[in-house]
Image (cartoon, rainbow, N blue to C red; front, side, top):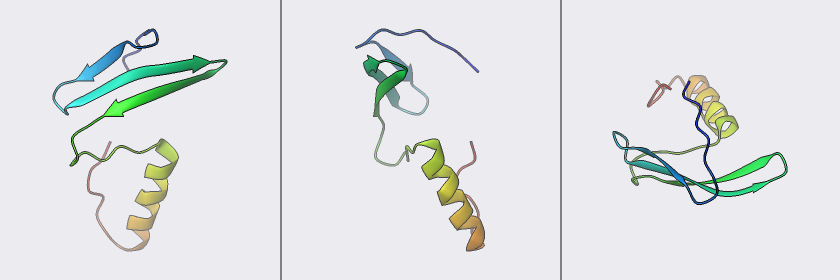
Length: 67
C-alpha cells in the first residue's frame, strides 16, 4: 500500500487508469475526496462494491473486475 500525504486541493494521479483523486476537504477525522475517472471506469465506496460483488455471486455471475 502506498501512503501519501496531501493538502486540500492537492491531487493524486493514476495515469494507467485515467484517475485523478483530489482532496476536497478535511474536517475532524473525515476526508472528502473528489474522483475524476473515465466513464467506463466504475468507482464505488468499498461497502457498495462489496454488496455488488455479493449480488453478482448470488446470481452466479463472474465479477467484472477484481481488486
